Image 1 (spheres, each protein chain N blue to C red):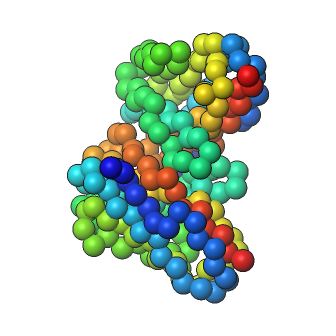
Image 2: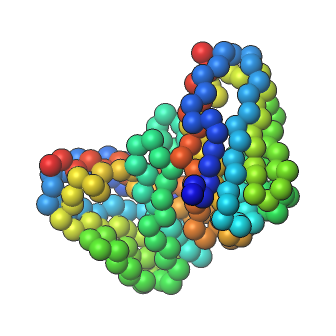
Amino acid sequence: DTAVSQTPKYLVTQMGNDKSIKCEQNLGHDTMYWYKQDSKKFLKIMFSYNNKELIINETVPNRFSPKSPDKAHLNLHINSLELGDSAVYFCASSQDFNGYGYTFGSGTRLTVV
Amino acid sequence: TQLLEQSPQFLSIQEGENLTVYCNSSSVFSSLQWYRQEPGEGPVLLVTVVTGGEVKKLKRLTFQFGDARKDSSLHITAAQPGDTGLYLCTRVPTFGRGTSLIVHP
């Protein structure tokens, strides 16, 4: 039974398209995150939600919009995709906003062509 | 955003060797976590350290938190190919750039 599941695992799309990545956790955690991992393996925080409220919103183009319909779900919508958006996107959750002990999903590899 | 420096960036060793990787910051950590990431997977939590000077062991892995809580180290004894991966330290939500370890059989 997967704790943090992301879909899809792979996404290949053309520049200019709009796409969404979904994330669900069944751990009962209050806080969820989106991270971007670039080609050099650097993990950079993008967004964090605690009980459906946005608590971290790093400097990310406004083409990226997170949505949390409930505390078990955090989706990421990306408009007008660009080549530079190609990366692996990880969803994670933690029990609370202190962040002790993240559980990560297995990632979504986005390739923009 | 707190900057975390990890060293070395890359490490390629033979099975059975020992190694140490480091995580440093100019600021004091309230706590620090180490994760390991294998190819195609998300990072997995190894340990959380909270108290200055704390030492935690996980089988052949030994984690140490500096007395001043500005640095930490991870020591692996008798490395095995299964230890291969990217080792990341984090002061949530900021991650270091990681140490990529390859252990050759």
